[in-house]
Image (cartoon, rainbow, N blue to C red; front, side, top):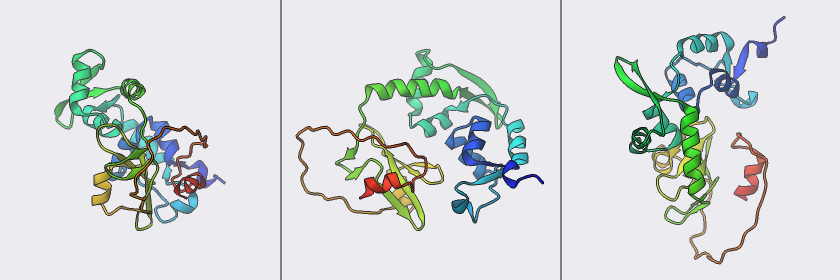
Length: 216
């Protein structure tokens, strides 16, 4: 007898097999091309599960290499102007492909990742936003759904990630009904620099106990 898990794939297995980003994965779900077979029990199962047969069909349909500039902008939080600037400077190569009845620029994700990493190496990592009074990995909730702050850039939008793998700006999250799970003190903070390093194992599960240490 064939085990049911041999006939299904988890969210991460699907993304790895199709070699796609969170953004494209979410779009495929919204379009109904990827439909989890365990919508009601995915939390107990630890992940959404998808039919291997369905994933194989999607793989056949997704033969266009790369992602559009719009997808790259949304997924990697880079402005369209910056992407076009990289193209003009010859740092980013694109392919012009007919997509949805129009000529569209497609770029390789690995090229985008490399350019983004170069930018991140120049820009320091921030763990607190005084303007919005939020900290890195701060917990937000909407009903039973959990999300966390995953990026506080020097310029631009603070990025929040929900447990379904969807990225959104902090303002978008608040508009959708997310609320902070706790209120941070607004008392003046000491700006004397002292450094303490903590090393935690990385987890993609936003409910992992590691995050509970941060919350408390």
